[in-house]
Amino acid sequence: MSTEATLLERAGSQCELCSSTENIAPFVVSPHTQITVDHAVVLCETCKEQVEDTSNMDVNHWRCLNDSMWSQVPAVQVLAWRQLTHLSSESWAQDALDMMYIEEETAKWAELGMDADNRKHADCHGAPLAKGDTVTIIKDLPVKGSSMVVKQGTMVRNIGLAQDDPELFSGKVEGQQMWLRCEFCRKK
Ligand SMILES: [Zn+2]
Image 1 (cartoon, rainbow, N blue to C red):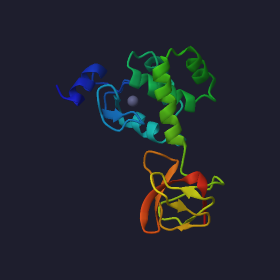
Image 2 (tube, protein in one colour):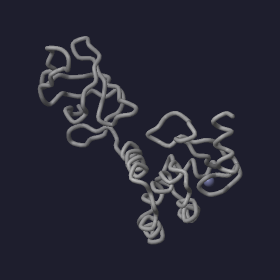
Image 3 (spheres, rainbow, N blue to C red):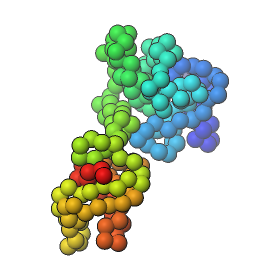
């Protein structure tokens, strides 16, 4: 059976958060990037949109978590925990979080993904960095595995950002492409 078929069977062909049967599809739970039976859930379009963008959550929709938080599936527990945490200014959501039973390992997964979602690339002063920015290095940085030192004051133009790590950016220094830590740069 394919991964998708296995997931749909587990989910009973319903959204694993709100039980909707419309527009459902497998969804990989960050920081994982591959859809596997253990790392994915079946979500409807509404849940998917509001999991991906928590700035616009429909509070009433998420009352469904009062049921789905009891799922036996760790990936479902992770998403339920994260959404409840985003809603924790609501007293019912905070109550649900207090009641929720979640294994230590699952809790770690839940927190890890939230960090990755929330943390953005930022320079030493917390100013947001974007692809293409020019930055200045604020201290001498030895380059691992070589005798090279990236000197304080070095300008790095046209930086790239690590997709999976908000602490790293890439850039060319003396003709060499390398990864550098955002905390050691200042945006121009
Ligand atoms: Zn749903």
